[in-house]
Amino acid sequence: MAFLELDKVWQRYGDHVVLEGVSLTLAEREFCVVVGASGAGKSTFLKLLLGTERPTRGRITMQGESISTGPDGRRGVVFQRYSVFPHLTVLDNVVLALDLRDCRWLARTFGTARRKARDAAREMLSAVGLSAAEDRYPEELSGGMQQRLAFAQALMAQPRLLLLDEPFGALDPGIRSDMHQLVRRLWQELGLTIVMVTHELKEGFALGTRLLVFRQGATRSACPRGLWCEGDLRFALEPQCLCCSTVGSAGEVRKRKEMTDG
Amino acid sequence: MAALINRKPGRGAGLFLGLLPFVLLMLVYVVASDLRLSANAADKLLPSFSQMGQAVQRFAFEPSVRTGEIQLWADTTASLERLGLAVAISALAGLVIGMVMGGLPLAGATLSPLVAGLSLIPPLAVLPVLFIIFGLGEVAKVMLIVIGITPVIARDIAQRVREIPRELIVKAQTLGAGTWQTFLRVILPLALPRLFSAVRLSLGGAWLFLIAAEAIAAESGLGYRIFLVRRYLAMDVILPYVAWITLLAALTDLLMARLSRRLFRWAELGQQG
Image 1: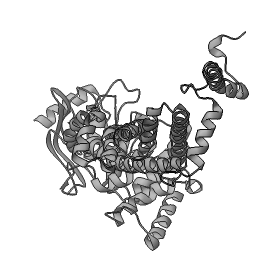
Image 2: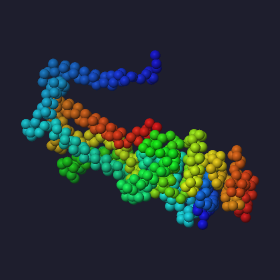
Image 3: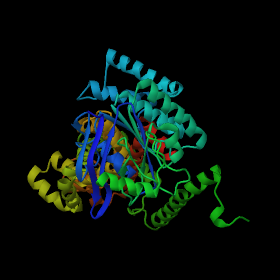
Image 4: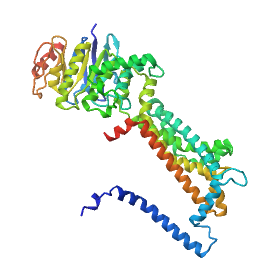
């Protein structure tokens, strides 16, 4: 059974079809990067995986369970903005996941459990390099530090799938490459499964083990190993399927479409 | 010479400009009062400051001949008890109703039109109803204030809750939070600073309703007193009472602003950034 499976997923808003019969499987520990121009459906794709939207048609399952019931603790997320809670200190932002897990009614831990939770949170903070800032509020942090905090907070809940929605979109280029290293490291050390949406094709090549290219109005087609990719000639770099190294082109997409339809 | 729109007062000049209108008003009053009193020493309309001082001495520092209490303190405690109780009830009710309205779309669909409708009823028009239902005692007065300010607070809180970025609510859920936990750890703390500002803004209305209710039916209270002595044209009592009420209102406002800044340091940071 595939870790994550999309089975003929359609998403339309009124007459506007955003996703058209997307089928896809994703293995555990994959780092899947979704690129494409604005309006190509990549944020819709992420919302479907997050569970904030339900597909018009089709099924999305993770380890055999449907995920279209709404966002929950199985999938963590880091957004471009508004990813951390402004009213909690850095440490409390990270402890929050444990507070929520351990106490259903008060959503807070006390005594020994609190000390343990704080220790675990401090460990996570040191993994993302934020140990020195634990008493500060997010507003007192730089953009890059806020995103580090968002990663630490999300990982504390031990999600099976981590979703990243343009997490570096608002950062300076220098900080962005630091963040790339951090995410790469966390992905390797913690054995995460990641789906990341970005509009930077280079970022996709640098980080991902798989690359999905979304293009508005184009038909998606499958590459020989089940990956679905397509060419978009507007990109400077030619999109490349990382699993079979096929370079996509408009002609090829059409050919594959015939293949899959046949 | 800099253009007028670019000229700003310095610290001292700012203080001076701020105090100037008060001093001018005071001067105008003193002159007008002097003119009237020199024309007719028994004039009651614009009492001199020394006349007001004597009145203050009488009702603020000497026990009343009739009841043995110091009248100003008795009135003040009676009024503040009503106001405090009513504002506390309104704040709590407004917070809960507002959070439910803004945070749960299903509940909001039912509650929002109702609260919007209720907030349009002029509270003073309902006062007779309250007197009929609750009698002339304390409950009717407290209820008037509660009815007057709760819808305003509730709608403000609901608005604040709707302004919370959707990302934060989703984020809480991905950390494992259910609806109750999201309310407790995200929506409530994010709404609290707004509760303070909503209560501060509605205090003006609360005082209005308090004084109106006391004027109509009460046996003590600041509003009761000024309406009582109106019969004797006792401006020497009314004016200090009005000043005292203003001072109380200003102090409450200042206190709440301070408290809010202390309790919600994070909210201040957000405003700067």
